Length: 368
Image (cartoon, rainbow, N blue to C red; front, side):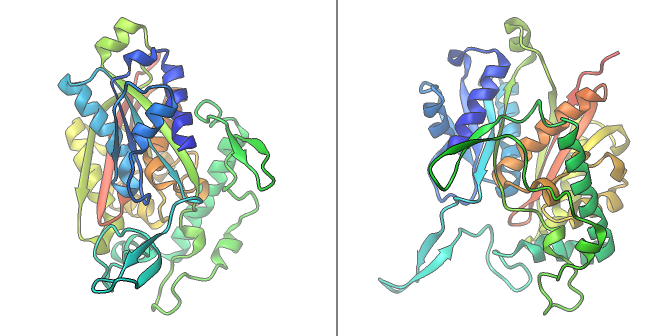
């Protein structure tokens, strides 16, 4: 909740709009078992007059929030919307589920599933439905995934050291075990000392599965974060003197069999490009979430995407994957990097629990 409040306040402050001009807040959440994080953030951020809507599409939740905000703005239903997502994996509650037919038998440490549990698509183990099944389907080797993960860490460290994230990070006060607080402003998950030798030496997550090649190194980390953007129309931005950082040109969602969750990105990217009226070659930069390294590798192989243009500042394997917040974080990173490079189109895409996927196409004004 504190993370959500922080980014809502900061997004509004940076927009230079007044609190009374905000019509709506849409925030994604995942694995929190209910509540309305958007309304909670509205009240704690001093926007008690603003209704809040929580959305849940697991990993793609905040991309959905931004797409929904753009749709409402385009329809003329609202004028100013704060959209994004928040996730604290370290404090996510674990629920108990009462065994049907009993009054006092409960399971322990249970999270609501995104799809029915099957051997082909276990609903509590994404290393199979996202990592392994994608690698098998596309013919991705362990070496390719290890190399991608290494590059992810290297790019994240380079981005941190060169100040790439400075414009987009909002420092937070992190509570310590002794009750004190420290300013937290630098991602701690990227590993400076990792190497191809270390990554290739990690044990696979499922040695009992013949040929299994996914490791902790080629999987995303468990992290806490929140991210938000302010979405408004060009007319409102012009009238209020708001600097337009990027335009949302298209958004899309798709779904396939849960067993092939990681492959859903291969469907959603062509869909969002078609809606935006552009081709792969027209995209200047990509953010394709590294829930597992197999996903962006598969997208590059199957869709003809230049991997040098993908995740230029790292992604899930290095920065971590904060589920409901990751999509909005990707959009913000994409926007700032496109601005540094002189503008153009960028796509943020990711698979999501239950065989889903989401994508958003943005355009940053080109500068001479």
